[in-house]
Length: 491
Image 1 (tube, helix red, strand yellow):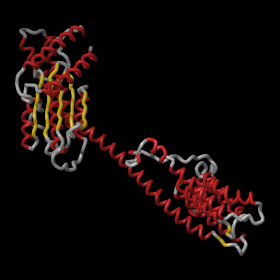
Image 2 (tube, helix red, strand yellow):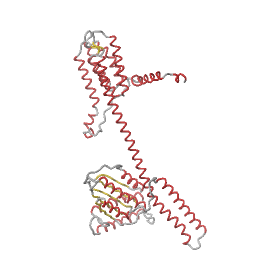
Image 3 (cartoon, helix red, strand yellow):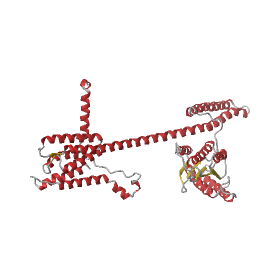
Image 4 (cartoon, one colour):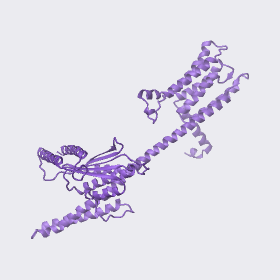
């Protein structure tokens, strides 16, 4: 412990450097590391056929094979057996350099050491160069580039330094008449490895940026989701608070509706009122938590479908031509369902104004026994679309409202170039409905047949409120089928 603290910074730096050398070039140097195929899901390659993309995936292996072929060609052209048999000279100057290049496909670090050790032996069977002849010069340069591309810049720097050191040592043992190739290899390899390192650094930076963007997008989506849920919670607070207020008022007035009520009944109503008032107090506290600091408390009740005409009038004034179609028997909905339906239509029309300027929109509402169906579809834009920040947040909010009510929703582009949003919000069956599943199903089917008959017999122009058009009747059928599926699940 004391010895570690007394070591100098130079010693620790040297130990760290040698540790990096051992990790990069010595530990498991001949381990099997197969060269992987390149990705073929890019914007350009991804458009090609499957067979073509499979062939392109093997491009790095093909390039290494071509490099090995050129190394062998260089060795054959410069083959000079001197005092060695021709077969031995061919193996040292042609086959082994080419095999060393191919070795980078499976054992890259081991290929570097083999290429380094092969150089002086091949020089005895080659030209007048030392320690790298033409074939080993080319093979070692290719090995440095391939291994540098497969590892990291630090490993490339280590290989270049060891190569220069090895060449300098070999020059001291070389014959004077031989031409040293250490300096040319050092220059060419330095330039090649510098290019490889720059490409690697750029690729790693792009990968890091991509990862950061992905994380940022995930966090942004999560934050948007939480904001939408908070907005829904604030709106539903008014609905729940209204019901709790009604409970408190009715519990307080109930004893006065009965003559001489027993004390137990009066105490029960007092307890109900106290619990309702306590629940209202807790609701206000929760609302204070989820409400933003700069948000004002609304002084008007939450909107429902009864205010839909006013919403459509506002968007028409903003330049969006809107057509409304209502099918089925209009009835009062639970406040949470009515509020969500209004907000879904409102957000869909707002998206149309932002992302489809100049388009027209249709709003279709279908009342069925199991719930209410909504459909908002707009045509293609007729004016240039300006970039809009926060794209996709409205869809997230709509989905959250639908999921909250156990409904279903679809959103996507239409064949005409517009956009369509369809949602179904289920409504619980009345409490006085028959308990027998078959009786409920038969009663509901008869009511649906009666509504369908009224729809066929009702005169009027398509698109008028309360008078179904041709497209609206088709959408009502889709909503009816969805409601039957919901009822089957409930049964």
